[in-house]
Length: 143
Image (cartoon, rainbow, N blue to C red; front, side, top):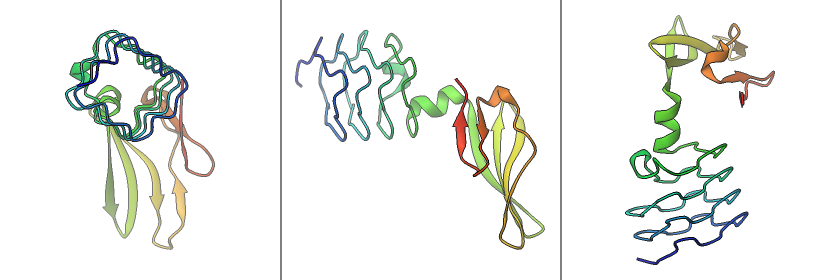
């Protein structure tokens, strides 16, 4: 139950940090690395997470409504999944497996593993999804 209100953690590596039960009102986490940090039962109020890496944290959308998450990395979080409105799944047909993405009740094929085991990039991905695939099949986010 630490009181860390208005603490300055800018550009700090806090990978795996345990903030359980803490008061983080007004705390600054700009450009901090918070991968895997525990935010269970944390009090947030105007907490600044601009450009922070929140990968694989248990941060919840309902707790950070007044926080600044501009350009924060939200991969593997409740926030990233809900904000994107996208879901990914595999579809098998005729011995081929395709990685699909669903957004706004529309389905788009991304990559297919053919019967021969080669990777085939599917047609161009519409820009409203917010990302593209590079020539190696990696996802590149559009800002």
